[in-house]
Length: 209
Image (cartoon, rainbow, N blue to C red; front, side, top):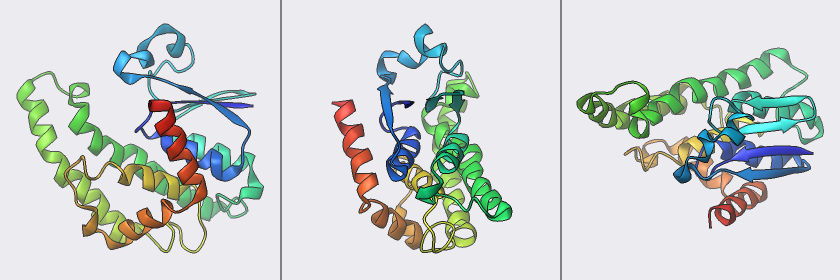
């Protein structure tokens, strides 16, 4: 059985949705970030980075959302969550997810985690003020150049879709109006209608209660 370490309202939601989409046999361990559980020895023994998600498998522990999503797609090929038979198409999936991880998520993190990059309070405040522009610019690129439609990669639902949905959930808090991006907004609405997404959200809410 797989074990997913997660915290509510984090990028770990993408992996939770993918596990539900795949019909995987898994369990979860919820971390309370408010209590600093991600920095305690028990969890650091699982993931020394002190972040989520982390997925415990029979072969070892995986971290970083793009890697976990790819593992889920490859472990449960019948769910058809990625074009595994086409090396180039699978690389395109990885490219999109890497952009969300390395660029969009980092832009978002400047609002809440500015202390990772600066100690000066004025610099941290300047980072926060920049977030609506930087995150908005990321989604302008996604909307105009990277989103094929009706799903991220085109006609087939892939592991890109739960990841984009998860990151898009942060737009309001980042001061970005999702209505600026009609394709992303329509995708967001359709994602929320999927049973796997509804189960993952219900599970996340229950765990947070």
